[in-house]
Image (tube, rainbow, N blue to C red; front, top):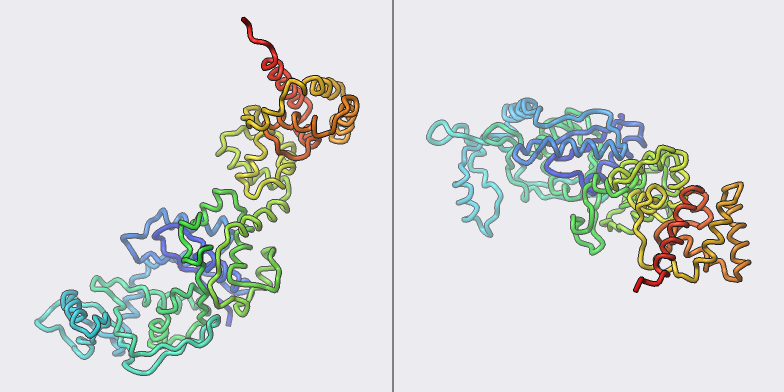
Length: 471
């Protein structure tokens, strides 16, 4: 039997990190077994489902390159199928019509010991509504005693007593299907072999198992993966930082880095931390999914993203950085090869694409705000040495890091100072900061024309401050 998994998000909001991990585990399991990954949009909540949310789900999946093989299917378009299966259960006596009104149900609930919400099966043996025609829902006829055992592929056997399961609704009075019924009908129709989902769905599983059995369909393998918690061990939410996958994209994370991090969030393969896509597919098994909740660590995600940034080719960095250059309202360099060098020189100082572009700002624009610490480096006493360096750099026949370094050493030797006494003012003049890549590399990448212009501007600034004010 070929493995078939599915990811069924509800388009009622953004695609969140927890949902993405569920999608990823289904994707990896299917790919590992050479199977099929199905995307199904569970949009039966008509009031809350929106086209915008659906579009965001598809966009997020595509950005992460979690390619689905079939779909997307939409539950809102499958109502006739659900009603047909419900009619079959009615005909076989496995479901029944319930004419109890909401007021009657509420009154009975309040009168029940402890206010138990379970349905009391008033209509279970009725064949017609009391008092003539009346709206009805369709209820599943659940077993009154016994138990359902779910052999969960992550948690092991989980036992549910039938005394805790009432005759639950499968069709509303308007003919629309309830979640638990839609899910099973869809999974049967789509031949899903493994249901991998968050353990917050475990409570739904016994009802779904009973529906499978009533439909005469084979049970899939159930695997309920633990929740993701925030660093404070509370359920992961927006207050722990970005929650939507597209927020991470817009913050400058790489899709492969996010996939790598989420794969390791609840799954392990020895002590290995970084995986290629191929490795994840080859190594992923449910046996290595942990049974306890995983803790989301933003700093660890940043570290993983940093590793991926370092390993990204300079040419690819140019393509990835382009949207962030535009967002920062910086000019996009026309020389892609030069920009690749500029980005490569600063990527050890950036953990995200956003930070990468910010670090490269001084390369692509002369509109660089100088920090107060950098401005403090441009003191009058540095002017003679800075002027000497500028003249010697202007006279160079070759402009490369090695030649520039030799020129620096000649100047500091002549002036009898340490290299730092010259390097820091030069760094301030060129970058507006006291921290940057190696100063020789900065000069080399920035180029002769821009470097000399900024050094001369720094000398003019020093001179303007040094001149005595007019009486």
